[in-house]
Length: 340
Image (tube, rainbow, N blue to C red; front, side, top):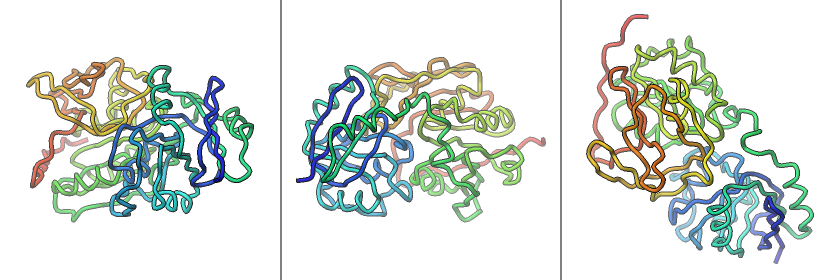
């Protein structure tokens, strides 16, 4: 069995089994999801992080590309109690280190009690604990990283849909494919634009709405997206999800903060303050809105009361947790756009 070592900030070194060899570094996070491992591993919001699966067996229903949220694996490494051969073959092909046969309960407990930490990984026949420590020593904190939007965003616009419905300009800060698919299913034509798109580039699409996507890292680093929100405020309906919500809040006078261990999993309970109704949502973010600015908080996370929904109906701005799915999904209806 090839050895693997995970050196965690604070001095701990965890030994496991190398299922996909290599070296890696990143912010150590966990997800509580017991299904959806293909979606998690291809979620751009996990860029530059080391993803630990809390559920003990990962890979029990194979690997299907139809479930991928993007065209590649985004975590810098993956940890689990046990990976199946299907998953590790996929990760080896993607050149992403994978380690199993370690106590993931201990890893998750440590992150929950002490917060996210940096880690370094060395996996393979010649790996040593010192190799993992060397990776840790050169690992930057997430707050010290340069803007990583360019690593997960399209570089040129891409259009999805038949062109017949309302047009949505989606600012790609690391969007998941299912978000685009959901908008198209509701009758929209979606123009996926680079994270640093200019107002002129958005205007050229003549959109009916502006949508800021999810993505990795600190929302403060997505400065071009802030500018777009301010530029089109009062001119277009504006929406955001996950990091996109945080970008909208910052653009409208609010502030954000880094969370201790984030919201990652498929069982995040969100309460709608007007109705009192609670829905279970899928989330993946390490930052939260600390100050909503000019927006009103309409939804909160039941576990920690962090804002989940923000709204300003007079200015046609809304961000928040999704409603329960409907079949068929509701249609989108454009509104007249005021002249510039």
